[in-house]
Length: 192
Length: 351
Image (cartoon, rainbow over the protein chains, first blue to last red):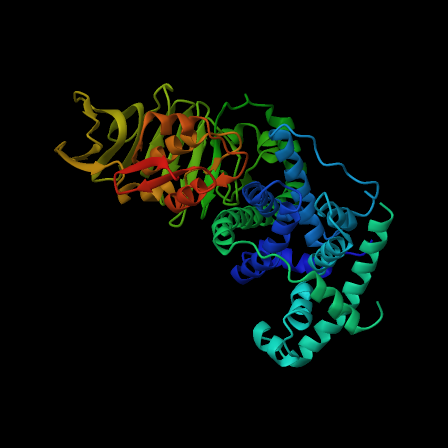
């Protein structure tokens, strides 16, 4: 099993008390964890409570993160437990877990698709957004800036306060990662 | 999907991902930040423990042979009685365990390291470490430590303070300053000093001694001060103002007042335990906050009080540091809100 070294480095920085690491972590992962929880819960208020519990527990258990799964997958695992706890508390059945439990990242991703699709386009859109959330670092943001907002490489570099070469390199890696994740998600989704 | 235009098409059809509400994100940042700070603190303590454990292990291997030989010629002493535990430590502290000299094997396997003067001294991180009768604990110039006695009475020792634990309900303040918090209806804790004895009657108070004077400041309840060859003097609290009694070498008594919510008490607050919120109600939280800050807690109506008693947290931890800010942020997760002034905490509906 390969370890997620970048994520391990993020957690080490967090545990060392680095304020900028906390800010970067929060700004990167809060929206993704929020979307993960919100897609599986009844309303914004429930999602807010569950996200609060999820991030609090994640922070208090940072030292247990070993890098065996990506940081996002690890957060989703905690989120899933909190969602189950929430459903138990309000007296509803837990959401069914599908049969591909062996792949943690896919479980996290597919489970976050809300029940009741109303068409292929919506399914595809949700898979795209889940794929973006599942990408490492800020790859999802870079792809959105480039292909949805239509920013140039120079403009993205200005926004992210980095160099143009760095952005080009990130875009190349982000495209590659997106293809892999999206194809996997599509295949898994078609077999379920 | 083979080129960039396909990615562009896919992303444009899907649209941008939903962004959470900025206010909510900022609100939850506070609680996440508090949990993160706690994790950082625990991580630092664990690191220090690991390092010191390694050092202690090496020292133990070196010492074991000599101690076993010593033990065989001396025989085993009576075990000491556990009377307290270290609950929080900041800066350097020393634990001198004279009783351990009677039983070197116990000393080896408990916590102390042999010191050059023959006593057992520890200045490593000792959180959760048990303390035994006759142990002496002292703080350095940067030290602060919270002890919990067997009956839950809390003793917070300020910097440059030395205390001997004589039994589970009796301690000797050798020098310096301590803060005692005896919640509920626990039995009194007797504190002996060179000046005389002090006994609490269910209270929170501060006691400091040096060569020139003894000072008792009361935050809650009542304290009995029994000087040698003198009638007892009582110090208490009226209208949230506590007595500060100073007795000098000529037995002259000077009394002033300090409010329960005065910044005077802040030094002890930094060593106060945080509160695990799992299963607790808003009412429990406010009771704790009132005790820590010395502020009175009031409810806008009986309905609000009822709501506070029946609104429960499902997890999280609140720190005693920055308690007022944390309290306000925490209540945003409920339908209740608090307004604070210098004297009180008022709970009302946030709707």
